[in-house]
Image (cartoon, rainbow, N blue to C red; front, top):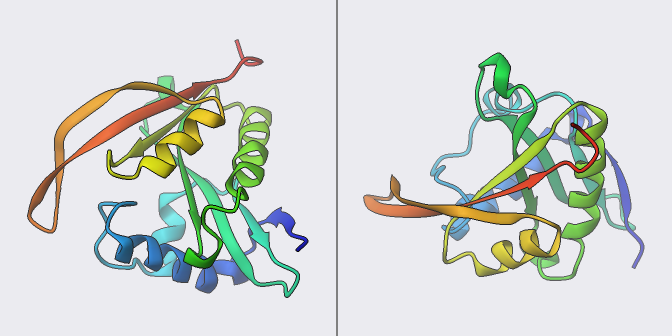
Length: 164
C-alpha cells in the first residue's frame, strides 16, 4: 500500500480528532479524558510542523503536531511531539515516516529540542522514539492523575544536531 505525507489542513480537523479520540480511549497515550473542540485543539499546537499520513483512499491514518512546552522566550525552540495513528495502522512502521518529517521540519522552523512524555506502559511508543533518536531523560513520578490514578511519565528528548 502507498501512503502520502502532506501538511495538515484545516479541513483535516475532524479526522485528526477522531484519531486522537482513539488515543484517549486507549488509556495509555494521553492524560486527556475528553475530546477537545477543534478550536481548543488548534490553540494547543503550533501552526507549523503539522503533518498527516494518508492511505491510497486519501483517508488520514496518522498525524503529528508540535505544541509549546513553555511560553518563555528562552524555551521557544523546545516543543512537545504528539503523534497518533488510527488503531488499524499502528505497528506497521509508518510512524517513522511522520516523525522523521517532523524532525526535519522542526529544525527548519528553529526548534532545537523535541520532547515526548510517554506513559511507562506504552512500551511501543518508548521503543519507537528510541529508534528515532530520542533518549530517555528520566521518569516523572506521579506527575498527574488519569481517572483517579497517579501516573508516571517517561520524559524523552531529541536535540537537533544542526541547530547550535
